[in-house]
Amino acid sequence: MRNENPAFRRFAPGDEDESVLETELMSKTSRLKQITIQLGDEIKNSNRFIDDLDNKFSKSQNILTATIGRVVNHSSTVNQAAIRFNIPYSTLYDRTHEMYKKPACGSCSTPWVPKDFDELLVDVIIKLSDWGHGINFPVISEFVCLF
Image (cartoon, rainbow, N blue to C red; front, top):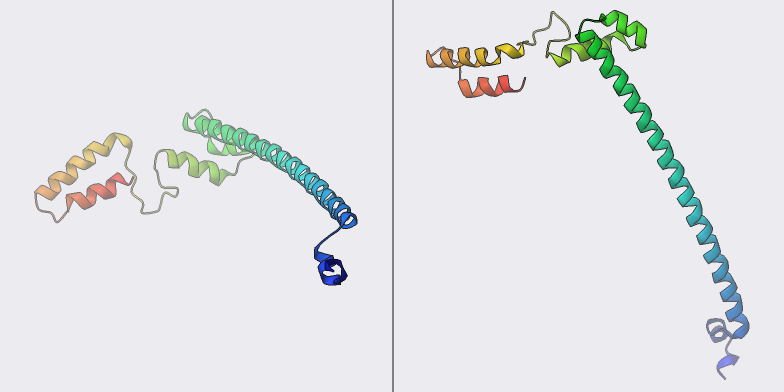
């Protein structure tokens, strides 16, 4: 009686239906395995590509650092280094001035204080604030520490 209902027969598979379902499941499993292998290969290729990019960036950074060192040590000028190593002049100029916290353009209003004068500047600010020149030392010291 149970097998007479066609709707029930569709949901209650017999031996023939089980083998069809088993075959479908095996094909889906093998396809999933292939996709997983392809994903693994793609991840390996991506990792190789990223490692290669990282190596290239490291080499470029080392070249730029060495070039900046030569310019700072005055063994070559910014212009010579820019031409020799094919690095934009503005990049070298900004990086060399950044090391000493000099403003990139000479006419800008950014204050530049050499490292040797940091303590002297702090002493002058303390004395001016003690003498009542309207200078608030904590605010100024925070400003100076930002440099």
